[in-house]
Amino acid sequence: MSPVTSESAVTLREITPETAEAILALSVADSQKHLVASNERSIAQAHFEESAWFRAVYADEEPVGFVMLHDETLRAEPREEGYLVLWRMMIDQRFQGMGFGREVMRLVIDHARTRPGVARLQTSWRQEEGNAGDFYRKLGFTPTEADEDGEMWAYLEL
Ligand SMILES: CC(C)(COP(=O)(O)OP(=O)(O)OC[C@H]1O[C@@H](n2cnc3c(N)ncnc32)[C@H](O)[C@@H]1OP(=O)(O)O)[C@@H](O)C(=O)NCCC(=O)NCCS
Image (tube, helix red, strand yellow):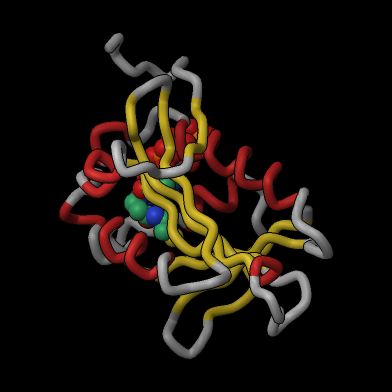
């Protein structure tokens, strides 16, 4: 496989029995583990949550990350109209800082625009060392306020 570069094409792909191990093996740095759940945990949760939409992130043919949405429109009986939240987002520590996270968000935003009755994409981050707040601000997200758990919320009009 040719090496991944910042020019590599970023795609979102469904996880298959053949690729699951590689996606489960992706990880952020130890110093970032308080910021996002492991992919094991996310994929397990996804299988019990009707509103979960999740994909592996590839740079060319190399698995480099994972993204998951809470998409209320997937539920047979939505609890809130148009509710769409970026639930999990990670780029493996070996591939951070290469522009892949930004490209994933562009693809996720394109996907979000196809969801029925959805006007905004929400996200949140823990207000702790190394948080991704500036990453989301650079993508145009507007921070609103922190919830009772200290999680900062932000939204992007689609
Ligand atoms: C946050 C994360 C997904 C970003 O992915 P990435 O591929 O490293 O980001 P990119 O290389 O596309 O960076 C895009 C821009 O955001 C900035 N950026 C990325 N991560 C950042 C962070 N944690 N804090 C501040 N700025 C950040 C980059 O410097 C870059 O800025 P530029 O356009 O001015 O050069 C990745 O670093 C990660 O997995 N972090 C650990 C888990 C995490 O925090 N997930 C989010 C949970 S809310």
